[in-house]
Structures are given as C-alpha cells and as structure tokens.
Length: 608
Ligand code: G6P
Image 1 (cartoon, rainbow, N blue to C red):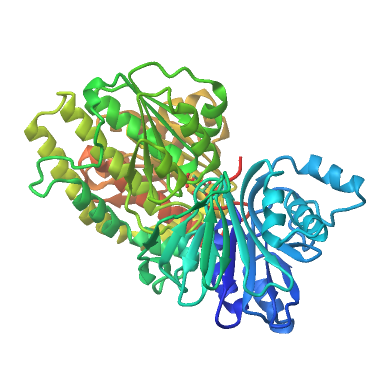
Image 2 (cartoon, rainbow, N blue to C red):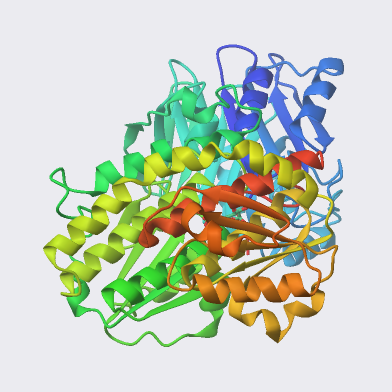
C-alpha cells in the first residue's frame, strides 16, 4: 500500500509528481503530499488529507517550485488520515516518503525521545526522517546518514529521501516493498511501479531486496545489502498508454470489465498451441504425474480464483487440491508433505501475506508456482515457476479482468494436468480447448446484457443485505459476487453454497433481502432451483442469473432474471464473473459511490 515517487527533472517537478501519484492512487488515497528542493536549495512540502485532487487544489494556491522532488499517496496504517500523518515526513534537512511498515518504530522513537527528539506524527515513518536528520546533524553526508538509518530499520520498506541544499540527489532503498528507477534524458525518476513512471520514461531498473540507490541526473549508483556496488539490468517496459488510461470509459472498472473478451483472447492465444491440440503454459520442470497434492494460496479475489480452480483440478485432473487464505496459511505451520506443489496467485505479485506464504513453502513444497499479473513482481521472482496471467495493467481497486485471466490460466493448467495424468485423452483435451476458445465470443454477448443489469442493480442497491447463492463450481462465483458488491457499493453481502442455505442464512430471508442465484444449466441445476424455491417460499426476492436453456425450468417466481448465452459447463465460472461484476458496478454507481477507489481499500496490500 502507499505509492511513492521521486523526480530529478529538467523542468518543474511538482506537476510530474502529481501526474505520477495519479497513477499510484490505486495504492491508497487517505492523503497525498509532495516535497521539493527549489533552485535556492530550500526544502519545502505540501500535504493534504483525502484524495489527490485535494493536494492539486492546494498546490494551485500554494505552489511548490523546484526540479527535484518526492511524493506520496497514503493508505493509513499507523495513525489516522490527518495532515500531520501525511507524507513526506520531514525532520531538519531531510524529507522522506515510505511504503511499508517500520516494525521497530516504537523502540526507535523511545530512543530518539531520550535524546530530546520528539515526533510530530503518529506514523511509523517519521522515525526514518528523524534518524536521518540526526545523522546529518552529526556531520554525515546524506548517503552516510541514509545508510546508517537503514541499518536501524526492521520491517518492510520502499523509501525515497530528499535533502535540503541538494537539488541533484535522491536516495532510494528497498526491503520488502517494490521500487523502480526510471531513466530519462538527463532526468531520473523513482516510483513504486513502472506505471507511475510511464509518462516520463519506459526505461526501468527494478531494485532488488536490500538495494540502495544514490541517484543524480547523471544516473543511479546501486549498492546491494552488503554495500557492494552492483549493476541491475535496465529494461524497456512497454506500457501501452491505452491500457493505462480510461480510454473514454467513466471508470477504470468499466473499462477493465469491457476488456475481458480481448484479454481472455490473449491468454488463450498465448497458452494454447497453434494447432489447438495442447496447452503451452510455461511450466517447465513441473510434471503433474509426480504430484499428489496441490496447495493453492492467495488473498481476496485471487483466493476466490483458487476456490474455483479446485473444482477443475479435482474433477478433471483427479488431483486433490487444498485452498488457503495466505494470512492464515503463513502462520498455521501447515505440514507440506512430499509430492505437494504450492501455487500462489496474486494480481500485483506484491501482496505481503501471499509473499510470506510463498517464502514459508520454499524448501518444503516440491515446487513453488505463481500466477501473477506483474511479471517483475516479488512473488514472480521468488517462485520456482511464474506464469503471467496477461491481463495488462489493472488499475481499479476491485479486481475484474485479472480474476477472469486467473481463472482462464487455471482452467488451462487443470486441462494440462488432466492430460498429463491420463485423465483426458487427446480428443477430450481438444474438445475442452475448443470450448475455452469460445469464451471471448460468449463474453462479448454477456457484456451486451449490461442494460438489463443496470436496471436490476438500481433496485438491488436499495437493499441493506444481499445473499449470493451458487452450487458446485458456481459457489466461488457467489463468493466473488458478494465480495465485489461489498467492496464498491458497501452493501452487506454474503456468498453461500446453495446447499448450505438452510444451515443458517435462510434465517436472514425476508422481503427486503434479495438473493442472487447463479444457476446455469449444469448437473446441479435442479438442486439449486429447489434452494431458490425455499427462498421464494419465505418471501425473499430472487434475482436469477442463468442461461437460456435453464431459464425455462428455473425462472418461475423470480423477482428478476438475467439470461446469459448458453455455455459449456467447463467455462461457465469464467463467463459468470461478468454479470456479478456488472451488478456490483451498477449498484455502486446507483448509490453514487467512488467505484474505482472504494473507501478503506487499496489495490496492492503490501502490509500485513
Ligand atoms: C486487495 C485488492 C483485491 C485483491 C487482493 C489480493 O484486497 O483490493 O482486489 O484481490 O488485494 O491482491 P493480489 O494483488 O495479491 O491479487
């Protein structure tokens, strides 16, 4: 969480800092701030509570000049969203921005207090500025002061320092939180990710664990955790402007929902052999015949993708699957018996709990595999095998296209496993792959029902509580529907396996509590329809999301019905992601909520 940025520019830094922060706002938006060093060497800062627009407004009235600067957008961990707690934090001649958590900040604060140095904020970050300022006072150079400060810090951080009187110096450091350095023409940049720097440069160097970079306009000198000068590769990161802008859509979420037929098409073309006969995922060294168990671990929507994958792996590849939430898995000391492959799913590839769970599994599991959207991320780099899900930049906090790309990659992997384990013959595999190839077309049809969904979403938005039900492979989709709705509309929602209804949630049913039932034509349709009848018998309004084939037998008595195109059973979970995403989107719009930046959430959760 939190986005950080640094600029050593040719022109005024403030507009560039704000532009970069705009692209990092998905990481948090509790407050924002920038600091600059002006031509006279003076260090100054501006900070504002709330979204970036408040900082922009402040800068109109109280501009900051200078070609060197740092900036921050905050997701609060220590201390409320106030101006005092907003970054950059400043002490004496130094200002700093931070992403991560300094775990020993209380001890460091107490030590500083003994020397009569008091903090102004409640943050963990301020001690970093205070320590560095004290070292500068003691006569150290900026680099010596930062090095001595870093030695004292425990926890996770990406940091960027700016110094009074130093208009051509930034010092950046990384431990546990990602950090990228951008190379311009006589300009240098620092950012939490390459997207932030995209308007300035596409030439990026990623810092590695423990690295410190001393940056001037002439370039960056990078030192590893042992203080040795090292070379880190510079790469061209092509970030298509259309993929990181809104492309005419009102929200990133709307754009990302609409992109799904295209990105799923990309996944299928990348990972199905050109003759359509085999899966071509980058899984070198992984043989599913030698595996007795698959452990899938993730957080949030990525965790729900794992739950959906369990149905595919168990049913088609006959491979037992265990699914876990990363924050539970990492501390449970789960035994990992031989024959286990541990697989971690993360859009960002930086989620702290998922990364820690991966590190726990290393050396215990036969292999660690990751499904990530950001190929340069920590989780991708640290796993034995990293499979990109190819969704392209996902900006909206609520995950949509990354979810369906995770599902599609999983579906292909399950088929590959089924074939390797002899559970699927050549013709069977070809048939399933042909079904998957129909997905982009089916999804385009599903997107066309948006008008009908908008109407029902308006009514749904009046509810205080909503239940989502699904059976079998539709159960994880019920969870995802509920999660999306709560995330962006703040309506309380629960996802349940339809068969579990009578063991508790049925007590919630009344005429003011709608139930969304996901029931395509599949082997369990009749059972789901019975559960739906149980809801309606108690006066509960039902929104049925189904297909044309099931609609005839299932729809009677429902308050509303959304009909999707009929799809092969294997691909239904991927297709049914679309209506639940659109439902949440339009409910949030009807309520006037901030769809792309829901309260209290952040996209990349780099703290525990
Ligand atoms: C946050 C986001 C979710 C996301 C989850 C896991 O909670 O708001 O959309 O699913 O983190 O993130 P990851 O990057 O690991 O997939």
